Figure 1 (cartoon, rainbow, N blue to C red):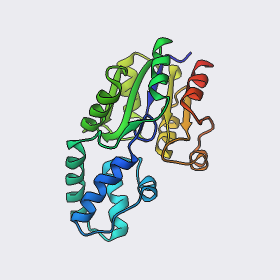
Figure 2 (figure 1 turned 30 degrees about the vertical axis):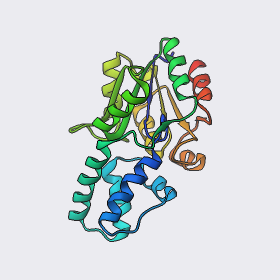
Figure 3 (figure 1 turned 30 degrees about the horizontal axis):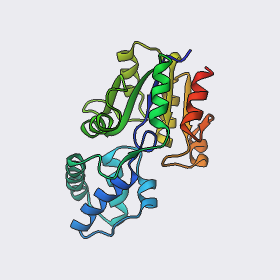
Length: 218
């Protein structure tokens, strides 16, 4: 029986792609690098802000020191207004309410910095989630399962009682490593069904209502 559900943030709960691209392009222009479009940004996201910056800057010829400086400035800029241009995907709020009404505890685990993660969740979901964790010092980012296990401990649940919901190959690797009861790959986010399948996903949801159906059947 599923007692808790852990959700990724970017591309799963919130459509943040335009926000990420906006702040990246602000900094790219300052550094006189070519800007990026949404599709290029989509291919670069998923493994945290540092990896995102590396994915963007290395093809543009940036050295390690520039990447480090750019990452710091980009993160600081993003944290000034993390909700800018961001919206929940349609049906997500209703999904979380429906799960909560069934007694299923909901949590968030993101590779986005912890401050931004908490700001976004507070802005769009209030106190609907029992536990919210972004990237924290000393805790390996996804796809390492440490963050999942921390949340399960706080919720008092076992992996066998947990569903994990995410939109990226990183999320697929995370729920496979965590050995949760149900790993759901959603197709409305930053990766295609083919990419998710290639990462090892076998259970898919095209809409939030399908997520509810899949969890309810466990």
